[in-house]
Image (cartoon, rainbow, N blue to C red):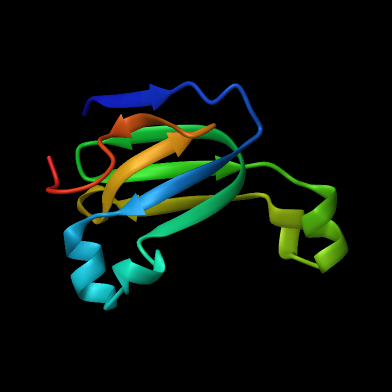
Length: 101
C-alpha cells in the first residue's frame, strides 16, 4: 500500500477543513466556520488510500491542562472526510473550498 508523508517541520498547529461528506454527516454550520478545526503540535502526517494519520507530540500547555500523555497521540481520520490540510496558512494536501476533488 502506498502512502505519502507530508513534511511538517514541526511541531506545528495544523488546520483541517472538512469535506462535504463530513459537513453533511456532522451537520456542520459552514456560515459559522464549523468545517475547520485544529490539531495541535503535529509532528507527522501520513496520507494513504483510505486514511490520514496525524501524530502529535507532548506540549507544556496540554500537560498544564491535565491531558493524558500531555497531548501526545495519533489521530486517524477517514480520507473522505477531509477537504484540505493547511500548515502556516498554506494548503499542503487537498484544495481549500469546494467542491471536493
